Image (tube, rainbow, N blue to C red; front, side, top):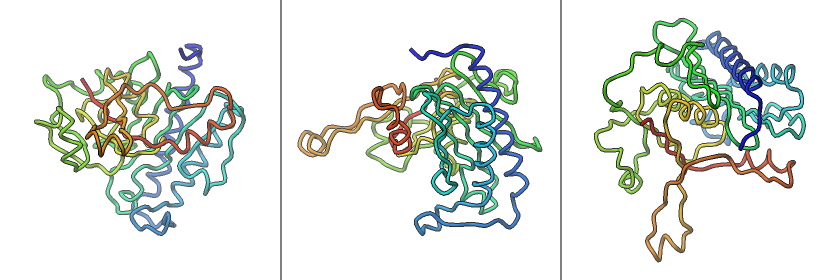
Length: 286
């Protein structure tokens, strides 16, 4: 079991909400304006902007003020020269601007995602979203055992719930993969261009489910807590090795996702393990 105090986790959630909101302010200030852009690995479909770096620097510096001994992982960590702060089991995981291609294309659908893990288990998540008719957007946030909130308001008081499950979802265009998902039937596919946006919308019961194919940890860490606290399920796709797949025709199986793998003996190796994590997760709102 995860060991943390209730008072601490509430404070962690408040900080995560504050950081996601602050990043949202920075993003809003630069949206639709000229910004410096680089491209990762020379791929023009994978841009990174000065806004990504500004948001990550803001979030990283604020965490250092409050919890200087906590560890930190950001999508732009290597480029921003952020280094881990210590050997704590608490690790903040941040995607400063998820949906950068949308942002640089002036497509108003992107997010800033802030999560906290304890010993590999997501315990706090906050995601800032642009939101219609709300000038500053909203922050969807949650912590283990405390439910989901939108700008501090309980989810059920923020959005009117529908009498039937949502008929919208996000899933890969793969006939083989979709054949293993019964919930694909009767659900229309949507593609937002931001996994963090997708997961926030599952937590809000706007999307019925999302299949995140090969995301990185910063894409999903915050959303895991939000979806779980909304009453949803998070499952990991465990693929068989190539031999079993070819000879025995075995397909992948779904297992409940509990935590990201960590090394209980060599604490120093955990940041590398978490940074390198990549898997396929299925998020479903019941």
